[in-house]
Figure 1 (tube, rainbow, N blue to C red):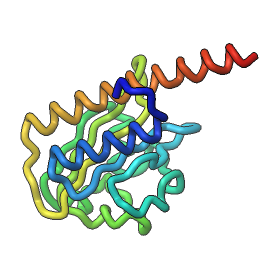
Figure 2: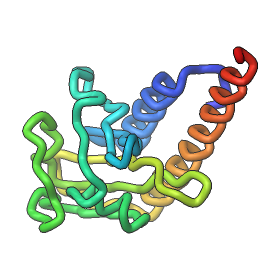
Figure 3: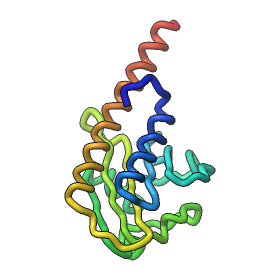
Figure 4: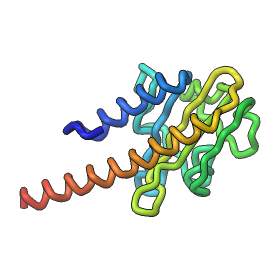
Length: 157
């Protein structure tokens, strides 16, 4: 994460690493943009949904994680949870297990990382701790990227 890379590239690299480490079927990163959660990175090779899937902080499991600033782990039938919101464009919405953490930067939620499995799965404490740590690191990365962007635009002025 310390190499000089664009934020989008780093997010996709993080998705790949998380997917490999947790042997999950899907990893998604949403970032807050104009008060909504927007899909910014996905382990899905078909990335046509990036930037198009948007949800309010009051919608779905992902919105709940952002709103409550809490980790959420569901081991089976995540789609049956009353907080669940179905998106026809996301095949992950039929998956069984769901693990999600907020991305927090400077005390506020700036995004959410979701990990999903097709089959039921009990997430270990290690899984939860690792994903929470990554969420914290991504929050720091976003602050650094914003500072770099501000500094660059200040130099250009």
